[in-house]
Image (cartoon, rainbow, N blue to C red; front, side, top):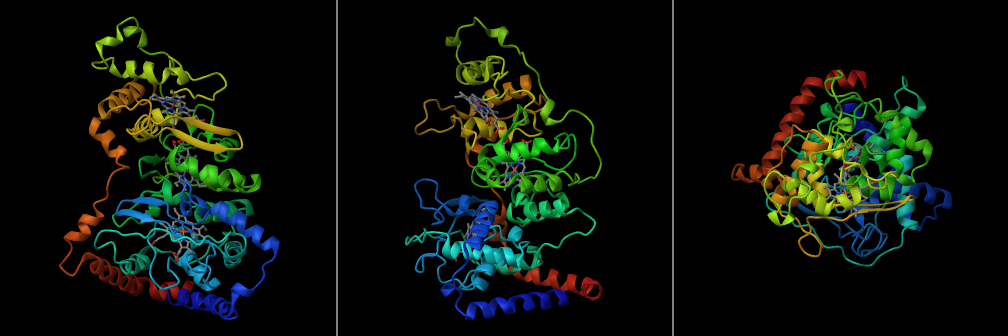
Length: 479
Ligand code: HEC
Ligand code: HEC
Ligand code: HEC
């Protein structure tokens, strides 16, 4: 602990001097700005800091649903009035790697500084050069965040940071190849795979003991991507994973929608093949949580072609979309035109088959329901991939009710996927609402009169002191 603090100070000093010599007047080389641009792409700054409904690049204003309420992204263009144009490099580094704004206030971890804390000083320098001189300033104020009490107290994040913010940049593991180290650096840092794929603990921190074993992100579920052959992607080859990260699809097995589609559209597809291979090398080495290999079919080989559609073929649709056949009827009316009457998809694979498909074969029904409600929308060099949403009650041609979606999802899982699962209309409503709500706000509100934010800080300090007492000397000796 002691040694770590000293190191951070030592790093901070040169940065502070750089700031004093007025960094903004500095001219950065094109090469450095280009490097920063690439890193900004790898880190997907654009996906969160741009309002996709007509907003200007990096000008903020995208509402991000979080379990404690909606957090607005900020204007990070070099506008001096409304953006980060007055940020020194040290302040920029603090915002990106430590979650502290130029005015000293703490950012919410919706900004993935926990992952970015792994980024090296050189890379932060390049990012800074890009944001100061490679991004067009936008003189527009982004809307502000207002969270319910006590989450509106930004200082409560200090306690959280003490507990959960790593304070070390990535260090190469000498026992691993250069490719693996580059992959780990990108996957755990800039590309922040774990932000979505790692489950969170009671205070919303990433539970590293379950690294990449799957987690709910809003209405979607980011599946287990460890090397477990049944629960993870242990059955995928290196090439399979690179193909998926580049195009957002892998034959019938997996299609990226939701936040993964965004990550691919804005970020991963633009990475070099060398970097994608490095990421794949690292990801494919991440063991499952129990370190054992389960047996049985994976989500990629559940279900089969053919089903009981024949049972009701010829029956009148006028009978209504109800009873045991309701799901099959809804499927025929709304889905079969693209996915085939047997769910077999099209020969060219543009419309995927719904068996041997990660969504229908998964160990939870989230992505089947989310796909029906929200559709698929993804842009890559291979073109635009689109499935219409069926849950939009405002302007969609077809809008399915919760019980219709539940019948349809149950039919799909029974005939094409994981037959052990069922969905209720209430489950559908939860996903319609954007995913399960966290009880954090409620827990925090119940907290002692002083406000649970304070309690979190106190708790954090106690735990920190306690940890320090236990591991302090040993750590100082080995650091
Ligand atoms: C997952 C979404 C997400 C990504 C990806 C992301 N940010 Fe952010 N960022 C946010 C949110 C949300 C805030 C505001 C948080 C708050 O108000 O507490 C923020 C705040 C910031 C701030 C503080 C700005 C201010 O108003 O003072 C900076 C600087 C910043 N981000 C830079 C970046 C950079 C650079 C990248 C890419 C390397 C990046 N962000 C990627 C969500 C994101
Ligand atoms: C912003 C959240 C987010 C980030 C960041 C993210 N993912 Fe994902 N990922 C998801 C979601 C959600 C899905 C499910 C998409 C679907 O099925 O439509 C997914 C699906 C996947 C799948 C397919 C698994 C399957 O069974 O279908 C792989 C592989 C994957 N991600 C790898 C990665 C890697 C590697 C990274 C980092 C380089 C990464 N993801 C970063 C959210 C994310
Ligand atoms: C207009 C054509 C079209 C229609 C109609 C359609 N889909 Fe899709 N569906 C697609 C496309 C395109 C994809 C994504 C392919 C890709 O990612 O490469 C997709 C993907 C999916 C996925 C996988 C999503 C994921 O994230 O893993 C599921 C599940 C699915 N569709 C179910 C349905 C159901 C159920 C219906 C009927 C309510 C339906 N689709 C109607 C075109 C369609």
